[in-house]
Image (tube, rainbow, N blue to C red):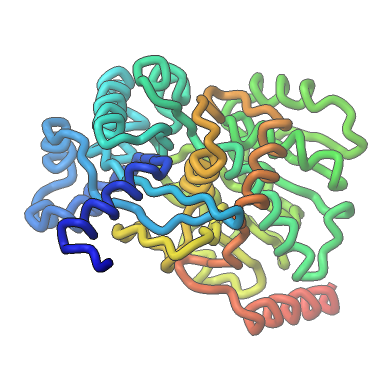
Length: 377
């Protein structure tokens, strides 16, 4: 029997109601990004735009459909916009920022979401999600565990494509004392020849080096970025800086830089001036199913940041509990979410560099530059 239009609508509603639902918080990185939604913002000074954003409530900006696990499970979700720029979140009143994020979380709850992911700078404000989770009736995650897993996988895979042997490599971690940097350093140390820990505070670096202990490789600390990068074949950049910190003059020939930070840690000048290094975007993940994000966050269709993917993975697993919160991510948690990602069909989406695919010709060109440099020395 054919269903009427009303019957079909009811069937769709009932199916949607059965789906586990997630939400993910996004925000404009700069005042200029606000002009994508509000054209008037393009004509206003940045301080005026940022002042105005304080009075804009969080809101749903898209409905995400078609996320389907390899197991057959399905989820749908929502993007919730937190109308604060990266600068406001990083340098403004943290209590005001947290209140705005919580307000967005309550909007997600009203939509039926069972877990909320915190994107970009909303994941580092205050105590990195702990207070936000306490104030909401749904689970909360920063997505940092899966971000660590995919960043390490991508960096090592890219290095091997260039002919590097990870066990013989020096690895620099920029932003090493942050939640992502800490656990990445601890997990990579037993796999490489040297780990160089970089952050602004020497005391915190020394403490991290002590926590890492003796992993069978050299561990050293540097507060200067250029000194940290000198001679390193692999770089994982995950600082919370509002400005770029990696410039073309700092990198060794053949270096692989996995830039996890948003805003970017790596200057666009690197792409313009250095055809002998490979910069890849950290945490680009292919999402299983016929997913429609219905929102342009700069990625190709059916691809997402790893932090977004972690939220989807937890929803698909029915694991509605707080995850990846605070400044200390456990190695076991990274391993668990990586395994769950594989179970549900999530995988690296291939390499992208400054919004462009990295093709075989690019890899070959870099290898040729490496060979030329080796002959020259």
